[in-house]
Length: 114
Image 1 (tube, helix red, strand yellow):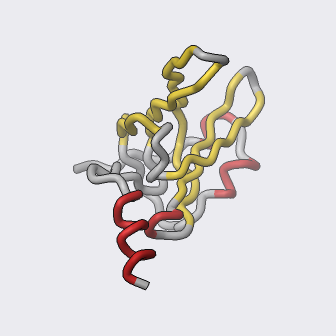
Image 2 (cartoon, one colour):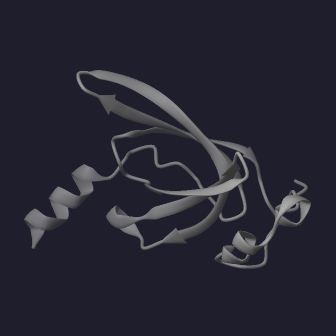
């Protein structure tokens, strides 16, 4: 049991990014193409957070060329370089799946005033 605990503690990131539902974030992801590596930026609204601990993930949604694109990122993944918070959102739900049905300005999340 102690070996499993030590293994999972070693896999967790030391500087875990703070991601909340409703935030607009910019995720820097390392992508391998053959032998080359590059960093791709995916910017959108966080619509869900799942699990916890080592399996924690967050879902980011954006609309590209009129088509909705969602991507799930594990927080502790070594391929996620960094997560920047562009703006914080004011929401009253844990999951924002209703944004999938909205179009245009109706799909926006209000900004939280600090």
